[in-house]
Image (cartoon, rainbow, N blue to C red; front, top):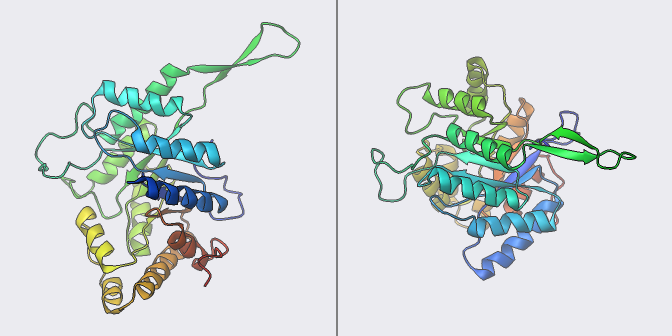
Length: 319
Protein backbone atom coordinates (compact mmCIF):
# COMPACT_ATOMS: atom_id res chain seq x y z
CA UNK A 1 0.00 0.00 0.00
CA UNK A 2 1.25 3.47 -0.90
CA UNK A 3 -0.03 6.86 0.20
CA UNK A 4 0.08 7.94 -3.45
CA UNK A 5 -1.59 6.09 -6.35
CA UNK A 6 0.46 4.47 -9.09
CA UNK A 7 1.98 6.83 -11.64
CA UNK A 8 -0.41 5.46 -14.27
CA UNK A 9 -3.47 6.75 -12.39
CA UNK A 10 -5.40 9.12 -14.68
CA UNK A 11 -6.17 11.81 -12.09
CA UNK A 12 -3.94 14.03 -9.97
CA UNK A 13 -3.61 12.56 -6.44
CA UNK A 14 -4.77 14.83 -3.61
CA UNK A 15 -5.19 14.52 0.14
CA UNK A 16 -6.47 16.57 3.06
CA UNK A 17 -5.47 17.42 6.62
CA UNK A 18 -8.07 17.62 9.38
CA UNK A 19 -7.94 18.19 13.14
CA UNK A 20 -9.96 16.65 16.00
CA UNK A 21 -13.21 18.47 16.89
CA UNK A 22 -13.33 20.65 19.98
CA UNK A 23 -17.01 20.02 20.85
CA UNK A 24 -19.80 17.49 20.17
CA UNK A 25 -21.39 19.92 17.73
CA UNK A 26 -18.10 20.29 15.89
CA UNK A 27 -17.81 16.49 15.75
CA UNK A 28 -21.10 16.24 13.86
CA UNK A 29 -19.91 18.83 11.37
CA UNK A 30 -16.58 17.07 10.97
CA UNK A 31 -18.28 13.76 10.24
CA UNK A 32 -20.19 15.40 7.40
CA UNK A 33 -16.99 17.02 6.12
CA UNK A 34 -15.25 13.63 6.18
CA UNK A 35 -18.13 12.09 4.22
CA UNK A 36 -17.97 14.75 1.53
CA UNK A 37 -14.18 14.74 1.32
CA UNK A 38 -14.18 10.95 1.07
CA UNK A 39 -16.62 11.12 -1.84
CA UNK A 40 -13.93 13.05 -3.75
CA UNK A 41 -11.67 9.96 -3.38
CA UNK A 42 -8.51 11.46 -1.84
CA UNK A 43 -5.36 9.38 -1.42
CA UNK A 44 -5.58 9.79 2.35
CA UNK A 45 -7.04 11.90 5.15
CA UNK A 46 -4.56 12.97 7.81
CA UNK A 47 -5.58 13.94 11.35
CA UNK A 48 -3.42 16.16 13.54
CA UNK A 49 -2.45 15.21 17.06
CA UNK A 50 -1.61 17.32 20.12
CA UNK A 51 1.91 16.95 21.49
CA UNK A 52 2.79 15.13 24.66
CA UNK A 53 -0.31 12.95 25.02
CA UNK A 54 -0.30 9.39 26.27
CA UNK A 55 -3.36 8.31 24.32
CA UNK A 56 -4.73 8.79 20.84
CA UNK A 57 -7.80 10.42 22.35
CA UNK A 58 -9.90 12.54 20.02
CA UNK A 59 -7.44 12.07 17.16
CA UNK A 60 -7.82 8.31 17.30
CA UNK A 61 -11.60 8.66 17.41
CA UNK A 62 -11.54 10.62 14.14
CA UNK A 63 -9.15 8.14 12.54
CA UNK A 64 -11.40 5.24 13.57
CA UNK A 65 -14.40 7.07 12.11
CA UNK A 66 -12.56 7.47 8.79
CA UNK A 67 -11.58 3.80 8.81
CA UNK A 68 -15.11 2.65 9.72
CA UNK A 69 -17.21 4.86 7.44
CA UNK A 70 -15.07 5.44 4.34
CA UNK A 71 -12.68 3.60 2.04
CA UNK A 72 -10.04 6.35 2.39
CA UNK A 73 -6.69 5.66 4.06
CA UNK A 74 -6.48 7.43 7.47
CA UNK A 75 -3.09 8.88 8.41
CA UNK A 76 -2.17 9.65 12.03
CA UNK A 77 0.12 12.49 13.09
CA UNK A 78 2.68 11.69 15.80
CA UNK A 79 5.21 14.04 17.41
CA UNK A 80 8.32 13.69 19.53
CA UNK A 81 7.36 16.48 21.91
CA UNK A 82 7.13 15.41 25.54
CA UNK A 83 7.05 11.69 24.76
CA UNK A 84 9.07 8.93 26.40
CA UNK A 85 10.05 5.85 24.42
CA UNK A 86 7.54 3.83 26.43
CA UNK A 87 4.77 6.36 25.92
CA UNK A 88 5.41 6.71 22.21
CA UNK A 89 5.57 2.94 21.80
CA UNK A 90 2.24 2.48 23.59
CA UNK A 91 0.67 5.20 21.43
CA UNK A 92 1.93 3.65 18.19
CA UNK A 93 0.55 0.26 19.28
CA UNK A 94 -2.78 1.89 20.05
CA UNK A 95 -3.01 3.26 16.53
CA UNK A 96 -1.88 -0.03 14.96
CA UNK A 97 -4.45 -1.95 17.02
CA UNK A 98 -7.10 0.36 15.54
CA UNK A 99 -6.00 -0.57 12.02
CA UNK A 100 -4.07 2.65 11.40
CA UNK A 101 -0.90 1.85 9.44
CA UNK A 102 -0.07 5.25 7.93
CA UNK A 103 1.65 7.98 9.94
CA UNK A 104 3.13 11.46 9.71
CA UNK A 105 6.19 11.54 11.98
CA UNK A 106 6.99 15.04 13.24
CA UNK A 107 9.61 16.45 15.56
CA UNK A 108 7.07 19.01 16.78
CA UNK A 109 7.23 22.54 18.12
CA UNK A 110 7.88 23.70 21.68
CA UNK A 111 4.74 24.11 23.82
CA UNK A 112 3.55 27.67 24.40
CA UNK A 113 5.85 29.52 26.77
CA UNK A 114 8.81 27.16 26.28
CA UNK A 115 11.91 28.70 24.74
CA UNK A 116 13.81 27.18 21.82
CA UNK A 117 16.83 26.47 24.05
CA UNK A 118 14.84 24.53 26.64
CA UNK A 119 14.43 20.76 26.65
CA UNK A 120 10.96 19.92 25.38
CA UNK A 121 11.31 16.86 23.20
CA UNK A 122 11.51 13.97 25.66
CA UNK A 123 13.31 10.74 24.74
CA UNK A 124 12.87 11.14 20.99
CA UNK A 125 15.14 13.86 19.65
CA UNK A 126 14.22 13.88 15.97
CA UNK A 127 11.56 12.85 13.49
CA UNK A 128 14.03 10.31 12.08
CA UNK A 129 14.10 8.53 15.45
CA UNK A 130 10.30 8.53 15.51
CA UNK A 131 10.23 7.01 12.00
CA UNK A 132 12.51 4.22 13.18
CA UNK A 133 10.39 3.63 16.28
CA UNK A 134 7.16 3.35 14.26
CA UNK A 135 8.74 0.80 11.96
CA UNK A 136 10.24 -1.16 14.86
CA UNK A 137 6.98 -1.28 16.82
CA UNK A 138 5.11 -2.55 13.80
CA UNK A 139 7.81 -5.17 13.13
CA UNK A 140 7.63 -6.42 16.71
CA UNK A 141 3.85 -6.49 16.61
CA UNK A 142 3.58 -8.35 13.29
CA UNK A 143 6.96 -9.60 12.03
CA UNK A 144 5.31 -11.58 9.22
CA UNK A 145 1.96 -12.88 8.02
CA UNK A 146 0.77 -16.40 7.27
CA UNK A 147 -1.63 -17.50 4.56
CA UNK A 148 -3.22 -20.95 4.52
CA UNK A 149 -2.32 -23.21 1.59
CA UNK A 150 -5.48 -24.73 0.04
CA UNK A 151 -5.48 -28.53 0.16
CA UNK A 152 -2.74 -28.75 2.79
CA UNK A 153 -4.31 -28.70 6.25
CA UNK A 154 -2.08 -27.06 8.84
CA UNK A 155 0.31 -25.72 6.22
CA UNK A 156 0.87 -22.00 5.77
CA UNK A 157 2.74 -19.72 3.43
CA UNK A 158 4.88 -17.18 5.30
CA UNK A 159 4.87 -13.72 3.76
CA UNK A 160 6.75 -10.52 4.54
CA UNK A 161 4.81 -8.11 6.70
CA UNK A 162 3.21 -5.05 5.10
CA UNK A 163 5.30 -2.07 6.16
CA UNK A 164 3.83 1.06 7.70
CA UNK A 165 3.67 4.04 5.39
CA UNK A 166 5.46 6.90 7.14
CA UNK A 167 5.33 10.47 5.89
CA UNK A 168 7.57 13.24 7.20
CA UNK A 169 7.70 17.02 6.97
CA UNK A 170 9.82 18.99 4.51
CA UNK A 171 10.59 22.71 4.65
CA UNK A 172 10.96 24.49 1.28
CA UNK A 173 12.14 27.73 2.91
CA UNK A 174 14.36 25.95 5.46
CA UNK A 175 13.43 25.02 9.02
CA UNK A 176 13.19 28.05 11.35
CA UNK A 177 15.42 26.27 13.89
CA UNK A 178 18.08 25.20 11.38
CA UNK A 179 21.62 26.05 12.44
CA UNK A 180 22.92 26.23 8.88
CA UNK A 181 21.47 26.60 5.38
CA UNK A 182 21.41 22.92 4.48
CA UNK A 183 20.37 21.43 7.81
CA UNK A 184 16.75 20.91 6.75
CA UNK A 185 17.95 18.84 3.78
CA UNK A 186 20.28 16.83 6.03
CA UNK A 187 17.30 16.16 8.30
CA UNK A 188 15.14 15.06 5.36
CA UNK A 189 17.87 12.68 4.21
CA UNK A 190 18.05 11.23 7.74
CA UNK A 191 14.27 10.68 7.76
CA UNK A 192 14.50 8.96 4.39
CA UNK A 193 17.32 6.73 5.62
CA UNK A 194 15.24 5.88 8.70
CA UNK A 195 12.43 4.55 6.50
CA UNK A 196 10.20 7.49 5.53
CA UNK A 197 8.19 6.81 2.38
CA UNK A 198 6.80 10.29 1.63
CA UNK A 199 7.56 13.93 2.45
CA UNK A 200 4.88 16.62 2.79
CA UNK A 201 6.00 20.24 2.65
CA UNK A 202 5.15 23.05 4.96
CA UNK A 203 3.01 25.63 3.21
CA UNK A 204 4.53 28.04 0.69
CA UNK A 205 3.06 30.82 -1.43
CA UNK A 206 4.97 30.71 -4.73
CA UNK A 207 5.45 27.69 -7.02
CA UNK A 208 9.13 28.47 -7.62
CA UNK A 209 9.79 27.97 -3.89
CA UNK A 210 8.53 24.39 -4.06
CA UNK A 211 10.12 23.58 -7.42
CA UNK A 212 13.54 24.93 -6.39
CA UNK A 213 13.35 23.01 -3.12
CA UNK A 214 12.59 19.74 -4.91
CA UNK A 215 15.54 20.34 -7.22
CA UNK A 216 17.87 20.93 -4.26
CA UNK A 217 16.51 17.90 -2.43
CA UNK A 218 17.01 15.63 -5.44
CA UNK A 219 20.56 16.93 -5.88
CA UNK A 220 21.21 16.13 -2.21
CA UNK A 221 20.00 12.54 -2.62
CA UNK A 222 16.33 12.66 -1.57
CA UNK A 223 14.42 10.13 -3.67
CA UNK A 224 11.04 9.79 -1.87
CA UNK A 225 8.04 11.70 -3.29
CA UNK A 226 7.78 15.30 -2.06
CA UNK A 227 4.12 16.29 -1.83
CA UNK A 228 3.37 20.04 -1.81
CA UNK A 229 1.36 21.20 1.20
CA UNK A 230 -1.05 23.98 0.18
CA UNK A 231 -3.15 26.04 2.56
CA UNK A 232 -6.01 28.17 1.23
CA UNK A 233 -5.69 31.55 2.99
CA UNK A 234 -9.20 32.99 3.16
CA UNK A 235 -8.85 35.90 5.60
CA UNK A 236 -6.24 38.41 6.84
CA UNK A 237 -6.53 36.88 10.32
CA UNK A 238 -5.69 33.41 9.04
CA UNK A 239 -2.72 34.78 7.12
CA UNK A 240 -1.36 36.54 10.22
CA UNK A 241 -1.78 33.38 12.29
CA UNK A 242 -0.05 31.21 9.70
CA UNK A 243 2.89 33.58 9.46
CA UNK A 244 3.23 33.58 13.27
CA UNK A 245 3.30 29.80 13.38
CA UNK A 246 5.60 29.17 10.42
CA UNK A 247 7.86 32.21 10.24
CA UNK A 248 7.30 32.41 6.48
CA UNK A 249 7.70 35.72 4.65
CA UNK A 250 4.60 37.83 4.04
CA UNK A 251 3.09 37.16 0.58
CA UNK A 252 2.51 40.83 -0.21
CA UNK A 253 0.15 40.45 -3.17
CA UNK A 254 -2.15 38.04 -1.36
CA UNK A 255 -2.01 40.06 1.87
CA UNK A 256 -3.04 43.27 0.10
CA UNK A 257 -5.84 41.57 -1.83
CA UNK A 258 -7.29 40.13 1.38
CA UNK A 259 -7.01 43.42 3.28
CA UNK A 260 -8.78 45.54 0.66
CA UNK A 261 -11.62 43.07 0.08
CA UNK A 262 -14.42 44.03 2.52
CA UNK A 263 -16.51 40.84 2.46
CA UNK A 264 -15.83 37.38 3.83
CA UNK A 265 -17.16 35.83 0.62
CA UNK A 266 -14.79 37.93 -1.46
CA UNK A 267 -11.83 37.03 0.76
CA UNK A 268 -12.74 33.36 0.46
CA UNK A 269 -12.80 33.64 -3.34
CA UNK A 270 -9.38 35.33 -3.31
CA UNK A 271 -7.94 32.58 -1.16
CA UNK A 272 -9.45 29.80 -3.26
CA UNK A 273 -8.14 31.32 -6.49
CA UNK A 274 -4.63 31.80 -5.09
CA UNK A 275 -4.46 28.23 -3.78
CA UNK A 276 -5.90 26.81 -7.01
CA UNK A 277 -3.33 28.67 -9.10
CA UNK A 278 -0.54 27.41 -6.86
CA UNK A 279 -1.80 23.81 -7.04
CA UNK A 280 -2.18 23.80 -10.81
CA UNK A 281 1.29 25.30 -11.37
CA UNK A 282 3.20 22.87 -9.16
CA UNK A 283 1.33 19.90 -10.63
CA UNK A 284 2.06 21.15 -14.15
CA UNK A 285 5.77 21.17 -13.25
CA UNK A 286 5.88 17.64 -11.87
CA UNK A 287 4.50 17.62 -8.31
CA UNK A 288 3.21 14.11 -7.46
CA UNK A 289 -0.09 15.54 -6.20
CA UNK A 290 -1.29 18.13 -3.69
CA UNK A 291 -1.97 18.00 0.05
CA UNK A 292 -4.53 20.56 1.22
CA UNK A 293 -4.95 21.87 4.77
CA UNK A 294 -8.73 21.77 5.10
CA UNK A 295 -9.36 23.48 8.47
CA UNK A 296 -12.24 20.98 8.84
CA UNK A 297 -14.16 22.71 6.03
CA UNK A 298 -14.77 20.70 2.86
CA UNK A 299 -16.15 23.63 0.87
CA UNK A 300 -12.94 25.61 0.46
CA UNK A 301 -10.60 22.73 -0.40
CA UNK A 302 -13.05 21.15 -2.85
CA UNK A 303 -13.46 24.56 -4.48
CA UNK A 304 -9.67 24.82 -4.78
CA UNK A 305 -9.46 21.44 -6.51
CA UNK A 306 -12.32 22.38 -8.80
CA UNK A 307 -10.80 25.70 -9.83
CA UNK A 308 -7.40 24.03 -10.33
CA UNK A 309 -8.99 21.55 -12.74
CA UNK A 310 -8.05 18.61 -10.52
CA UNK A 311 -11.61 17.77 -9.50
CA UNK A 312 -15.06 18.47 -10.90
CA UNK A 313 -16.43 21.33 -8.78
CA UNK A 314 -18.56 20.15 -5.86
CA UNK A 315 -22.21 21.16 -5.99
CA UNK A 316 -21.84 23.21 -2.79
CA UNK A 317 -18.88 25.16 -4.22
CA UNK A 318 -20.02 25.68 -7.79
CA UNK A 319 -22.27 28.65 -7.04
